[in-house]
Amino acid sequence: MRRHRIPLAVLIALVVSALPAQPQLPRPLPSLREQAEIQQKWLQLRLDRHLPELMRREQAAMWVIPMREYNEDPVFSSLVAPTTFAARRRTIFVFFDRGADKGIERLALGGSSQGGVYEALRDTTRVNAELWGRAQWDLLRRVIEARDPSTIAVNISHTHAFSDGLSAGEWEQLQESLGERYRSRVVRKDRLALDLIALRIEEMEPVYRGLMQTAHQIIATAFSSAVITPGKTTTDDVVWWMRQTTHDLGLGTWFQPSVDIQRPGQKVSDQAPTVIERGDVLHCDFGVVGMGLHTDTQHMAYVLRAGERAAPAGLVAALRKGQQLQEIVLKEISAGGTGNEVLRRSLAAMRLAGIDGTVYSHPVGEHGHGAGPLIGLWDRQEGVPGRGDLPVDPMTWYSIELQATSPVPEWGGQKVRMALEEDVMLDSHGVATWVNGRQESFLLVN
Image 1: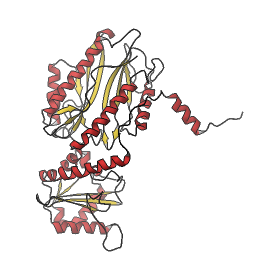
Image 2: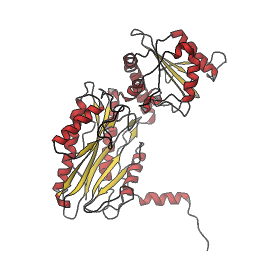
Image 3: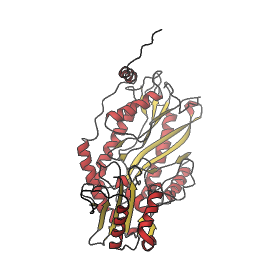
Image 4: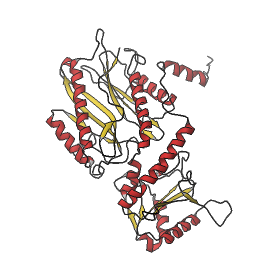
């Protein structure tokens, strides 16, 4: 029997045609060229505003950050132009505090000036040659000797991944270049890289609000009759619709979205694709990426039964418990303190309000699970040593992530979990506000 091969283009067309129809959503970002211009201004402003304050607070006279192509330090993306995607061969960034009057000197030993942000040093022994090998380390030694810093900060940390970017090979060569005199001046300053990554600037806020609006629009459309046909559409169909729509809007995502189901009298796996039925409670976890900024959102939906116009009262009350816990954490995060202190106060207020829940909130921004203090983990409600001991600082962003579980009378007392997640911005006074509001009621699927 002769077998006919189906062309790849036809297979792709068949797969795409099987997905739910694509409702049109507005593209949230300008052209790539305009995005790069905006991000370049952000880079300049962050280094001008935040770097001097951070280095002086940490008593770091010099900060040295060596890295090689495709093995970049986590702080790399906070230090380079939006048109730079990897370190050039080897790049060594050097920051030197020349005092309050002259400010922070910014040098790049290898790589470019990043649009004029750094003074890029080249190989002076060869015409139009880049620094290479031993010559690069020799130049670094001369740079250090000429400035004679009292301390030299490096990115080595046992606690924070964002502060542990100095690879073993680079560290060994750096020590050799420093010699005994300057090796004794090396200090590990976890919060230099950590806080530079975490701190936001006001100029980023309009873009982030636009991204959050788009994330909410995608979820609202995904959890509607535009995408879901009860009894036919699977959770996997909705996940891939969200992925495809995100891509078509010129955005990325930092994790595979998820859609899961709770239904009366039945435990539904959150792993296997499941057909969505009337009466189901739906939950999604979804994040978009644009212009180097990440969102993180979890919303709830209800699939109406025949004749229903709203979710059952017991489910509405359960959602309200989750919203009440959101309000508690929003208040406590604005009050300041460390991540562990915010967690402890939030859980105490939660118990006083009679809510059965957990809090596992985190920084967000340049990464989905960002630099800064953890406010609990789902399995660490007693606090997170080290990573939870950092302070909640002004001008940082957080994803308030939590869940509240309540018995629902209409489901025979079955417990239903309302997992919610919304992003907030802390202003210069440390007061937190929702980036784009929050989910106030169930999304309804007809």
